[in-house]
Each structure stands twice: as C-alpha cells, then as structure tokens.
Length: 188
Image (cartoon, rainbow, N blue to C red; front, side):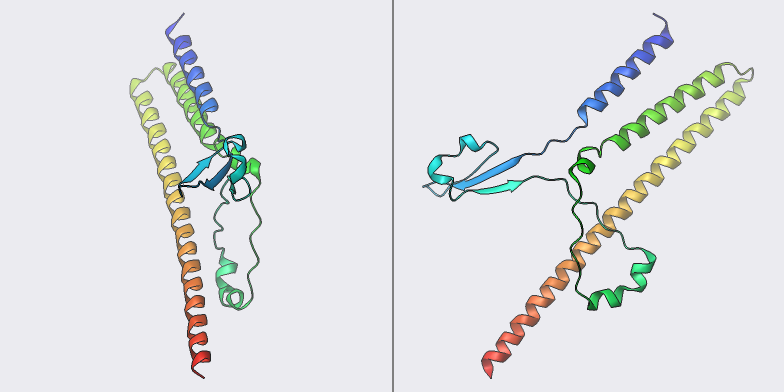
C-alpha cells in the first residue's frame, strides 16, 4: 500500500466515523413522584409503577426551533407588530433537527477534499516557492472561512439571546402592570 492510498484510507475511515457519530436521538421522558416524595425520571414507560402512571408527567424531547432573526422590514415594522398580537412561530420539523449534523460534516469533507486537491496540484509544479504560495493562500482562505462562520454563529446566538431577554422583559412588564391594576382595583 502506498503512502497516498494509506492516507486516503485513513481519511475515508475518519469521515465515516464522523457520519456515524453525528446522529441525534430523541425520547419521551416519564416523570413521577413516589410515596417518599422523590422525583424520578425515566425513559421507559414499563419502569414506571402502575400506581404512579395516573400522576406521571410525560416530556417529549424535540429539536429546538431555529431562532427567528429580525430582517430589515421587520425592524421597520417593529412598532406596528408590538401593537398587534403576535402569532406563535411554526414548529420545526423533526427531520430538520435530526439532520443538523450534515452541514458541518459536508464542510469538513469539502475542506479535506480541497486540501488533497491542492496537494495533488502542487506536486506537479516545478517551482517549490509557487507551491508554498499556493499552500499559504489555501490555508489563509480556509482560516477566513472558518472565522467568518464562527462570527456568524456568534451573531445568531447573540440575536437569539436578545430576543429571549426582550420576551422576558415583556412578560415581566405585563405581570407587573396586571398586579398594579389589581392593587388599584382592590383599593377602590
């Protein structure tokens, strides 16, 4: 076995392991409180005693919905939307959550394939300096791509947290105003 085919075999094995390791599993969780007051959580209905099945709570694990990012038109219409009652966002499909690992795997496979293509192309070059420049440009391009992807991920996460905090503030203000109205109504 040559050095190139051995490294290609190792690459294919690692890519196969990445494909197998990336799957996500979801299950129903059953929660009940026994006679001693201990809360027990299990993933099998058969392990819940029959006398506690009437009072058990079932929690379904589902993929989390992607955060809704505000667009330019939604920012302009923000005041109008706050006055109108908001509709609940549609739930994400189960397939979207289970296949979320495909994109990172494809990116890694693409980067590895690009690396092997650059290696093959630079072997045939006469100038060693030109090969080094091509390596440098390739790695700088990959670094910029990875940095850009990470920055976009951080922006999405920050916007998601901002939306959650704003929602919590709205709920807290609504609770506070309703409590004040109740207090004023009771005083009259």
